[in-house]
Amino acid sequence: MAENGYADLEKQMLLLHDHQEKHFMSSEIVRDIIIGVSDGLTVPFALAAGLSGAEVTSSIILIAGIAEVAAGAISMGLGGYLAAKSEADHYVRELKREQDEIIAVPDTEAAEVAEILAQYGVQPHEYGPVVNALRRNPQAWVDFMMKFELGLEKPDPMRALQSALTIAISYIMGGLVPLLPYMIIPVAKEAVIASVVLTIVALLIFGFAKGYFTGSQPFKSAIQTAFIGAIASAAAYSIAKAFRA
Amino acid sequence: MAENGYADLEKQMLLLHDHQEKHFMSSEIVRDIIIGVSDGLTVPFALAAGLSGAEVTSSIILIAGIAEVAAGAISMGLGGYLAAKSEADHYVRELKREQDEIIAVPDTEAAEVAEILAQYGVQPHEYGPVVNALRRNPQAWVDFMMKFELGLEKPDPMRALQSALTIAISYIMGGLVPLLPYMIIPVAKEAVIASVVLTIVALLIFGFAKGYFTGSQPFKSAIQTAFIGAIASAAAYSIAKAFRA
Image 1 (tube, rainbow over the protein chains, first blue to last red):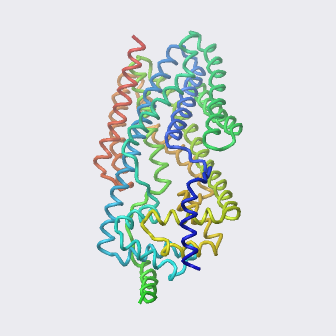
Image 2 (image 1 turned 60 degrees about the vertical axis):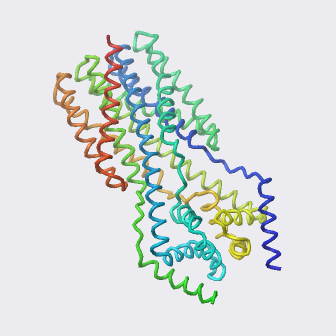
C-alpha cells in the first residue's frame, strides 16, 4: 500500500505541471524599475521645489536638478551593479565552503540536513532515507544545502549589469518629469506650480502601476507614493526657505 | 543497521550545536546603513560639486545640498518603510494561500513537496515518508511550503519602521559630510576642493568598513566606493558646466 502511495505521488507530480499556481512573483527587473522611478520622481522634484522656496531662478533650479539626476542615476546604477555583483560573489564563496564541508565533515553536514527536516516534525526514520539519498549525490547535496540551509539562489551572471542599467534609466526617466516645467517656464515661482501638478499626477500613475505589478492594492499604492513625494518636497521647501531667511 | 544509522544521525544532530559554521550573514541593519550612507555620501557630494561647476555661491550650494539631503532621507526612508511593509503583506497573502491550498488541493501540494525533493535526486520511496510526515502536520507543512517552495521567511513586524529610520539617519549622516566645507568656506571654488578631499576620504573609509562588514575584500570595496563617488560628481560637474555655458 505504501509503495502504491508513493507511485501515486509520482503521478500527481506529473499532473502538477498542468496546475498553475498564481503566486505573484514580482520579477527583479520590476523591482529595479520601481526603485529607480520612485526615487527619480521624488528627489529631483523635492530639490527643485525646495530651491524655488529659496527664491533662485529657474535656470539654477534646472542646473541643480539635472546635476542631481546625473549624480543619482550614476550612484544608484553603480550601487545596484556592485550590490548584485557582491551577491554573486557571496554565492560563490558559500558554494565553495559547502563543497569543502561536504568532503571534510560529511557527518556534520548530514546532521544539518536532518536538523532542517526535523524542524518540520519529520521523524528520524522518515528523513533518514532522504539524508542517505543526498549523501549518494554530492552535487545535489551541495545544491540542497545552498537552498535549504542558506536560502541562497544561483544568481544570474547578467544580473549586475542589467540591474545597473535598469535603475539608472528609470531614475533619469523619473527625474526628468519634475524638471520639464523649469525647462519651459523661466519664472521659478510659476514653474514650481506646473512641476508640482505634473509630478503629483506622475506619482499617482506610477504608484498605481507599482501596486498593480507587485500584487498589492493599486489605489492605496498610488496615494502612498504621492504622499512620500509631497512630504519630501514640503520638507525640502521648508528647509530651503528657513536657510534663505 | 539502517535504524541504527538514523539513530546516529540524531546523535550527530545534537552535536551540531557545538559546531559553529562561519557563514557570513550580513544583517539587514548593516544593509540599510550601507544603502543610506553610500547614497548620502555620493549624491549630495556630486550635486554640490556639480553646482560649483555652474559658478554659484557657497550659500546656494549649501541650500541645494541640504534640500537634497532632506528630500533624499525622506524619500529613501519612507521608500524603505513601504518596501518592508509590502514584503510583510506579501508574506501574509502567500501564507493564507498556502493554508487554503493545503486544505483544498492536498494531493497537489503533496506532489509539490515531492517535486522539490525529486530535484535533488531523491527517489519516490525515499521522499514518500517525508511527504506523509508533512501531511500529518498541516502547520509544519505550510511552513515547509513557504520556505522551500516560495523561499519566503517570516518577516519581523518591527522591520519596516527600523528600516526607515536606519536608512534616513544614515543618509543624513552621509550627506552632511560633503556639505560641511560649504558651511565654513564662503567661496564655492575653495569649498569644493575641501569637499572633494573630505568626501573621498570618507568614501574610502566607508567602502573599507562596508567590505569588512559584508565579508568581501575591504581594500577593493574602498576603491570601488570612492570610484562611484568620483564618477557621479564628475558627471554632475560636467553637465552643470555644460548647461551654464
